[in-house]
Length: 550
Image (cartoon, rainbow, N blue to C red; front, side):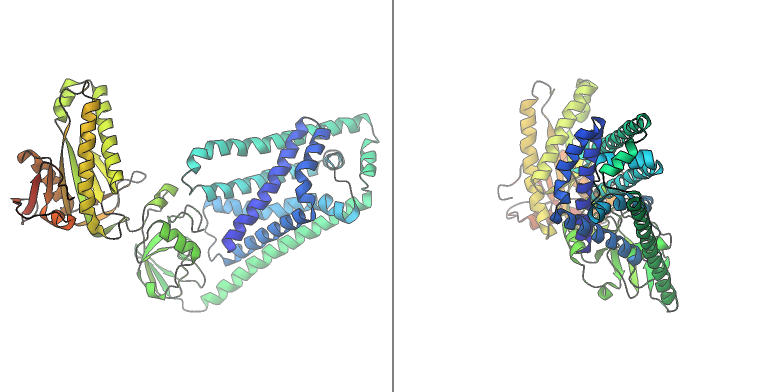
């Protein structure tokens, strides 16, 4: 609930800021035109309901910020988190003078806070206020943009929209400040031409010197209250830590062997950061990205069940038993954890399904090889070969996706696919793999028809399928990791695929895979072949086509 309130209150205040800056941008045209625009866009906010909504959003967001500062057990934050936090704490200090001289003065003293009054006060009466206002706009906008970016970066559609949103994020404050400066220069020139212009403007706005002085005093009180609240939170944090250090705490054991004392109320992510142990957290610990996921190998029974946010995030990635989010788990007893993603994981890594970070599991491995690719290279130009191969891999990938498989990797003129990864029962993998093989053969026939004028000879493929235990997970160099498998099962599937040449057939499937797939094996003769590195041979079927029952 607190997370939702934080986001909702932020969006309400952002809507207010957007309306305000949009009106300021029209100052480039003229102050009179901007005044009419400001009256239109701010009318909802000046109503009783709009005022209550805005004040509620501010106090909810401000109170949440102070509580978050207190609740954090560690202030070892990422750079963007520190930047957003410090900018947010600076906003009340920069805002207090503007707030007391406009909305509060309007309500308390019936001051007409139109553009002429505000701009003359900022640019003619007290120019430092203009610099303060510019700093306020930049600070509020930077704080909002950081929050929006790190909220949306975990969304799949954000990458496509990011350039357009960045353009808006740069243009709106630039235009608003350009209008503010242009209008300020206009009123400075007016004041230089007419020495009584400033006094007349304040008189028309019903803002005598005592009202201006009172608003300044009120702004000072707001600033002192804000600084006092922040100081109180920091002192409370220190007292809490002192009380904790007097007790013997339980220990959190990291997979690296490092042992960390557990602080009451601290999340695993905060404990690791506080002791300088790198750990992924793209969203900053808000249960959005799932990159901080860990496997709890000891102490899982002492943890409370996952809360709504964590449960929703874990369900989204299909997390298996023992996987929790380090940003949400607050241990109170001995705990051992293993990070499941690299410390420099990206938002895209957060979409990898749970349990694929590295585990031994049953899986169906399929190898597909394109026959005669060497002759194809001899007969065609390199660009033509690339075109044909890209079409081939595209169609094979579509066949795999259509039959619930996972395109794992390609090897020159072949590829490897995994079946049963995301199924509740991995035993469905062999049947899906056979359906995938049928789909591939159909697509190869279609390619042969479409490219008959480009091909020196029809495309042919060989397919090997095996079902057994393998180590499945994210593997490869940083930033280029893929979900794949290693082990005897992979070697066996590759060996079976190579046997399609020896037996002049299209598909070779191991006996175990055929049995699990539910094929009718009555009357079928099995062959045997040795697999490099294994003492036992593997039994298999050599097929020209996928059986109709598959």
